Length: 145
Image (cartoon, rainbow, N blue to C red; front, side):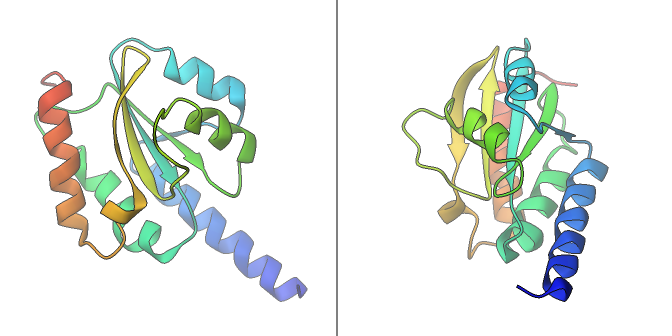
């Protein structure tokens, strides 16, 4: 790989990180961060971020817009697949019955995994359909803010 490619990828990764942080999500960069966040009381939305086009064009916009709703998760967190590998692996260990998928969303309630939106439910869909799916889960599992 050329140095220009590495600089470009660093910019893409930084932009992806900044975009989700600006939407109000806390980055979990270590397995310890994941354990601490996943043990919180209340509901936790986990966005598994990535640098792919469907993350930037669909998943991150859906992550940002879905939380503007009467019912929303208590905690918003993110792990970055392919970047923070150990944290992502630790998070995925909680998503029982689901293969690794990025981008994706998982919802936990009082530290227990309750549901997931996988890549195949994001890729090829428009951001609003993902927002609607997320808000449907918020309606089902979250408290009014």
